[in-house]
Amino acid sequence: MTTITSTEQLRQVVQAAGLAPSVHNTQPWRFLARPDRLELHAEPTRRLQVLDPDGRQLHLSCGAALFHARAAARALGLDVAVELLPDSSTPDHLADLVLTAGAAPSEDDIRLAAAILHRHTFRGTFDDRPLPEALIERLRLDAESESALLHEVSRSEDVLELEVLLSRADAEQEHDEPYRRELAQWVPNGETMPDGIPATALATAAGSSLRQRDFTLSHAAATDGSAPAADHPAVFVLATVDDDPASWLRAGQALAAVVLRAADHGVQAQPLGQVTDVLAYRLRLRAVLGLVSRPQLVLRMGYATSRAATPRRVVDDILGRVAV
Ligand SMILES: Cc1cc2nc3c(=O)[nH]c(=O)nc-3n(C[C@H](O)[C@H](O)[C@H](O)COP(=O)(O)O)c2cc1C
Image (cartoon, rainbow, N blue to C red; front, side, top):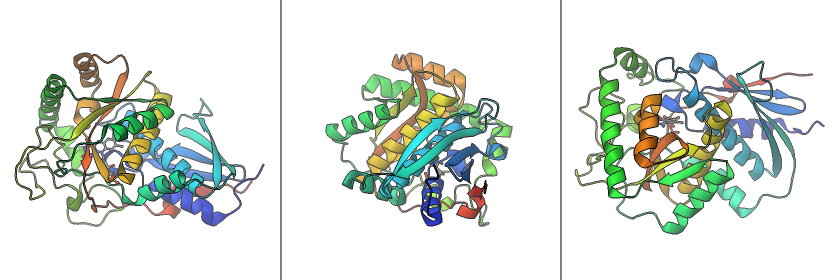
């Protein structure tokens, strides 16, 4: 059944997908519109060869784009059926989306899609306000709906363990020359790029005890100008039962579901990726927190107003068409 009738709708869905979070803002995705479906492919040339040898973070990023596409389609009154990894002979072909005319979007659908425009990774100091328990529960359910788990790290001894692991992982990366060279390629040095993370998005929280990734490789760390007061964000580990490409895509969808819901409530997030970049640290994190599931990403979250948008590739660059 040919279901995508409007080119304009298709472009809106793909544009929304392109606003998803991605590791180093690599935007490692490509969409292919066929008469009966929209295909999501990985863009292997955009995989971080040093940081992401097995493509786990590429899959997380593409999973997030997939959730954005689903949310945007639903807000347009389209139902979306998704098949993950439809063809094992082509591993870069990550998902097929079949869009069909559906019921009118609910208020919730519209709010979630609207949050796509005001969700940004926030690296500064959060407001003091704690996240309400009802919102945390909602975020947990959002992750579960995407077959992932959201664990809050709330016990002070667990936060301390996480702080120690983060600092160790970060210190190792700091001395890793190939890591540093690769990171530098994604932090524009004055030039305008359609990807990467501009300096405007990099101001970090002055008083954070959770080590933030040093994108400037200086450790002089541009701060957000706030007083170096203690920062007490809510901290979560996003995890999956298994640890394979399908699970990574699910984790990416859960990531987007959680951060969009949060953004709709005025809450922003920052992944603290250093402690999950390397398998050995993911396993240590799992052990110290006593998790049965596989950690995929750590998030710090809190109330913040973020306008630090990062650039995006244009729709024509990420959307291709196959006529027949
Ligand atoms: C898998 C993954 C890992 C990430 N790791 C980090 C990280 O370690 N530190 C950080 O500040 N942001 C991290 N980010 C956030 C990206 O840098 C951010 O999504 C990207 O720059 C686009 O910006 P935006 O989220 O504001 O749209 C990560 C995002 C993803 C999807």
